[in-house]
Length: 127
Image (tube, rainbow, N blue to C red; front, side):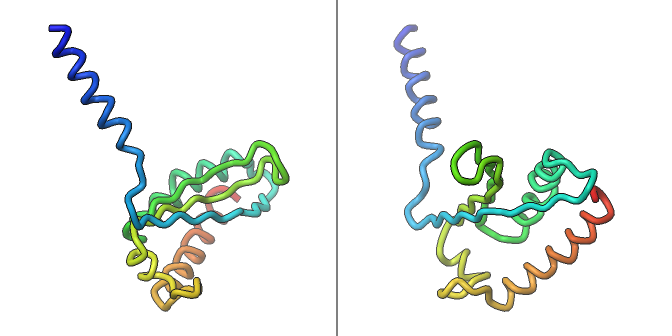
């Protein structure tokens, strides 16, 4: 019985340990954000909006992309915000961006859509 419990625990821990490994070919990107809040809007409201509305919507349309909003707690930019992009392959990145990093047509149209859609949403909802 002890052997079965030990083996089951070992297998479970093995799956958990390997669940967080990045696959070969995964791309990681970072972006530091400058946020200027309108009067009456708190940073917590902005973070809530970004993590619960914007990021899920972006991930639906940017196939193979995962975004993480992060907050700095020390260093040069204390209480600053940033994004970490995890893209499963270069192919998924090239769908929206050229090799030189500039957005292609799909990237531009998607970016403009989000700026217009969420710009209007932000003005109506939290600002």
